[in-house]
Image (cartoon, rainbow, N blue to C red; front, top):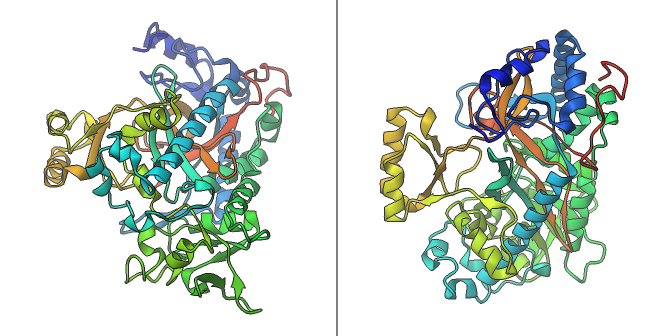
Length: 509
């Protein structure tokens, strides 16, 4: 039981005086809206009062309006491996998540520290590799990573920024603190949902939104553009920037088109570009146009068939030579995936201490490596209690959640771990924090995480907010959209204080 929880029976009784919250239950996880006694947290009080003053039917109508807004904008994602139609409207929950200024300050400082250390690590790794000589990270762990690119050794990277765009997954622990669950450094997705969530909630809850002093996120597109400009080759003061997409069948294609529009840059596929004399050009109706910066949403393996996978039709032949020659910038740099390998995640606190001589502001989650004999046996004896993840997978794929698994699934993962221990890590099953969500006409508790987006160019910029992902299935801990999850808007307040209940029009949303 949480330290501030005197008893669940009393907590539930305190919550049931509003009709919309009669199905709401406090559990062992940290609750974003209520403390352990069922008392509304100060920064949620106005929202709680406002929800209680609105007829549930009106909330249903506003949820329908939000769903239609997503439908009309074509805000979709793709689920791979399903027999039914794979393209779906992104599930949206209309009750915002609220973070105070103090909470965000800790997150911002912790993520800035983390991305700085990871960029220093990549610079070192592909340079003198002192981090390996000093034994901070095991050499065999790096060299066995499928995302490590020997081709990048000795390649000069503009401003030494290997990771310009990152999306780091945070969870709130039962004591209320935030911790890093994993780093996404290759081609992190989801920022378009963060931005459209804000657009939609401002339309469906205009009075509520204006009553809170919420920090804006709509400048993300211009911040991203400024980050990309800062990475352009030094001799190109007015650079041409493009977004390289794998094409319309990619799961994040909506996001690619959305961000290209936000930045006012061309959206291109590999066939739209070509390389001549180690310079990249874009085919246009006015003739070839030189390209200086490529924000790529194509994985390393497919970026250049001459350097990596020869069967790729998504990339640009000769692109890696142009990149190595310094005539074009790629964001993120090739080879960054080694730093978000889930097995290397264990060593990030050491990297922070090694490069910055600082203690981590945001903690890691306890993690067991299956390549370690003792830790592997510890996990195999407890497969029904832990979460097992494949080190190179994302989107909720390649994962076993022990408490919710079948004996057959556990046996399958046991054999997979024994066959290839390097490919797996395990972590405790976390009690992700819970937040109120509007589900089937009622407000119910669902587990959430948070993915803020970090931009690293001439300076580190973190737009205040992020994508709060929601495990919409009751009791589920999987927040990925591909596994039945959704999202909600994330409000970061300018100050720790929020509007007092009753300070704006009664019942106004």
